[in-house]
Length: 593
Image 1 (cartoon, rainbow, N blue to C red):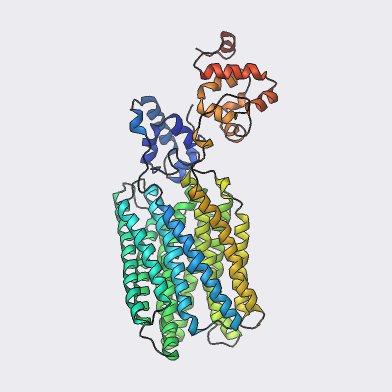
Image 2: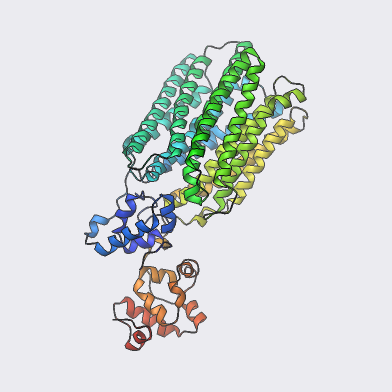
């Protein structure tokens, strides 16, 4: 078999195991199981920022010079090969317990009362928020980072055992801390919750150290997206410190007036650090490494990326400071700075979208890309919504609209953050698992449920300021979203549990009429000359081999070309058994025995 840019990795690794050493240098390292992901070599080169021609030469050299003991080339899975799975699965479990489901219950109670501000539900609302941010978002970020960043940097994860320990620590402490949040004014639960919060912080610090050491051991030059990653990690540590401080302080708050003052001053900045700082900055950074090299979008120029990094983070820091000044002093200057900070963040997202040419045609369009495009649209919508908060509040005669502000926050958390998690995971999990992407199921159903649910929540929650009939529809939106996430989670979980496609890894193929052309040529490349001798010229065309040969059996091929089936199958069997073609057949193609 001649290796070319359209050759699939399983085909290469089945026939030439010595090529694994070359591919591992570029970051394959266990991705996709024993025979790699079911992707073309050109996709692998782009995804790992490898020069395609150089990679092809290195692979061909490995094929030509291989004298290794086969046992030395045997695939031995390591601790870091599938480390994303427990994080992703735990994130899904959190979503369908204390995350989205508890949030839906809370929303239903609020809707039944016809109000959105309820201090008696404060503990369950905060417990839900903690599960979503420290569980759903953080677990997916940690799993993705451990799996993808070493491969992005063509290196190995530093201390995989420690990385696994951060998972167990985070999963256990998250469970305890979320439960403690329901009873945060009980002295015993305050002690337990504080200890769990400290363990969460310890796991996060461990995560940051592991990533820093992993990036440090790489010989590749630093890229702009890495600065976003480490800015996000700064906000992440700050977010868990703030969470711990607020939990500890909540046990000392007494009376409605104190609670209103405490929540009014600290809740919005706390969530900004978590959502805009940690999650938002990470998504903006990872997008610059992920979208151009996985989907083939345009690569954002380095100077533009660094400008966005500065604009986003300065705007965010200004936003937090301006809000706290505005809440305490109510000055026009603070209000103006608050508005300008939102304009800066909105501009940051718009500049990246334009830089990516996100809505132009690209090389790797599939169902997962629609989630990413929709996520960026929701980012624009949410920040634009927030910018209009003062105008809306004045229009409806309120000092502050909880409904409008909550609609902004939901648009950002579900519309942007969760949509990006769903999109990215739907692309990478089949690759990492070595599974054909089509086995992920029809995600357009999940896509529309999540987007319709988000639109219902944003729209009807805002209308609840004016119309009582909007409350039930607002409550219904949560279960529409949960349905969409459920469809996605079911398919993703199934993929994570599946074994790599046997078809793609070249299992034994018997030369029968029902055997597929693709499977025969892949496992027995010497049969290519038989196909050519009988007039199957398209076998040399890489595109035809990938598209048509996968679904066409040998019997169908014979009928299409008018070739005697028995004669053709006999020639294939003789070639597979090591016998040469007949002199008359060889003479047709000038083939040497």
